[in-house]
Image 1 (cartoon, rainbow, N blue to C red):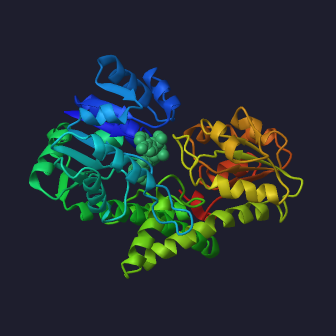
Image 2 (cartoon, rainbow, N blue to C red):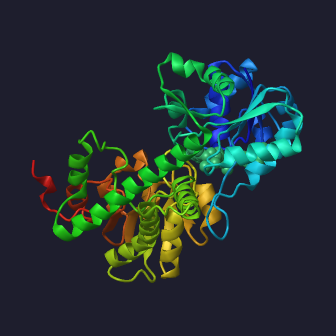
Image 3 (cartoon, helix red, strand yellow):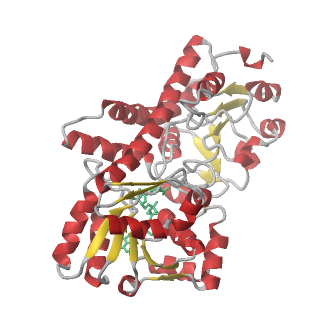
Length: 441
Ligand code: NAD
């Protein structure tokens, strides 16, 4: 099929490259010219494992093309995906639909009769219907359909998630549109990936419900971790025991400094606003949002406490800045709350992240950027792990400790075993590790 992908961010670019791999003809469009020029040369503006090779393959086969010319892309497409950003609106935090609306108006003016326009961006329930009405005002004469197809990929494992999703959700208002989208995803249904066909409203809400549920799961284990510290239990063991229950599942039960990233923070708040406007407040989600916000600043206090109550004049080495490993995405990363608070409290920060350094340096004033993990420990009073990159798991703890002035290790991701850290001479502070019995075989 001939597909136009509007937006070449994380979702648009991964979807475009994977649809081209499925055998479709994909024309991807962005308003940022420099991004398109780089993509045409096979350069990837984001860090996502495997994506570069896939984009280059699409370019080589001629199944994937990039331009800033939305008109040309839409005027030859059977299916147009909208994958533009839906950030938090300034003020009330609801989803800001201005990019979706602007793109939809442009698309409406140029589409072929019978085109299916698909909302891939995460948008509040009811948006597909409202966008359809907006497009019909722009172009009352050409028949077209609007569908919802929310995306569930995770940054860092986006290709695997797109190629082998748990399910594909298709929201439509008629059977012909469902058939078109089934054809788009035919390679996945051949692999027996479940395709859930439902109303546009249910599809839109399923996306927010999934993200809110996962955000609550993280928040739950974070609160259990706090309790563990007070009652001498170890959250790693509690989470293991909890996650082995198949009704619960082991994923998203890793305690840490609070969820961040490009989706959970904005999507939980947007869902909260949708529910409040509908007169059905979601109190669990509201509480998770508040608990998570507090947690990020509480982490700075925890680090200060681990340093003896003050970090004024102290040097803190930081391992990891991105909101999670395997991405360079810094959106709503806990480091953006924690590091400025430490700097304000008088600390000197020296930090390293395997791929997030350039963006982090742009966003956080006053930190020294290091070249490798050991460099962060050089002369430091304390080392803090904020993101659990695999590269940090295998570090030599004695070597890390040897370069330091102090002996404090604050492990906000429980990457290290307390006994190993203590054997290397650290005073170790993990999350939710109140128990000294963890070493019992
Ligand atoms: P992003 O900000 O990385 O990318 C959006 C892109 O759209 C940008 O490159 C921007 O220049 C482009 N754009 C904006 N207006 C345009 C227009 N009129 N024409 C062409 N291009 C335009 O966003 P993202 O992270 O890819 O997210 C996109 C949507 O997908 C959001 O709604 C998000 O919530 C959702 N989502 C994101 C993820 C994720 O992991 N990032 C996962 C699932 C769903």
